[in-house]
Length: 270
Image 1 (cartoon, helix red, strand yellow):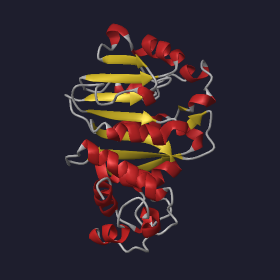
Image 2 (image 1 turned 90 degrees about the vertical axis):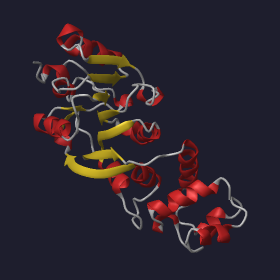
Image 3 (image 1 turned 180 degrees about the vertical axis):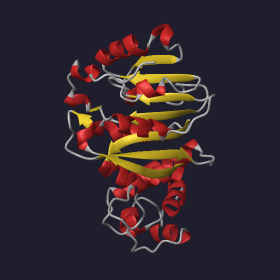
């Protein structure tokens, strides 16, 4: 079986434009992979496998298939050499930009996903992933600041659009931090690993779009009162707010996820 080889890191120069940092700490590699829950009939997708820091552990798991999504052609060739062919027949390597993937049609059945996300695209990519409604569980390593936003509770300064969209659709847990010394090259910030487990709720596509638009609107002006934000956006702001039990003087960050979601669903017809 293939084990992690530090020569994989030495032979490639990380591209800053793609947010590349290679995870070299074997304990953290194992800890991240073991955080993912899976069954023998599952498919696991890894975004941005790079040199294979997590891949060398994923390919040993008893699952149907492991799909690797990698943008950099250098790493696609490397991954094909190390993990492709008859040695690992369940591995599928796709050269593609993760921001352009249709995550709903990638696999016919729901799947599980793991990734050390590039810092520079983490938020738009996470939004794309959750909107597919096709991913049962995600283990993501992100910048600590992003992790704090994901799990933030209402009333906190880090609470916002990302917190609401994710906590509405997924049970979100921040698992542990990973320090800069675990990477080459070393990033200037600490990373955190989060688990997102899909909630068992039915989501109408129009509700998803409406809630996303509503959260964008109110958190773009997060210091304003709700009556001011909605003025000119709904026909009767105070009646709309009263319907949802919200004081006109409330500010977005004081409202619960559920309250904002219900308001967002109604927003298009208000």
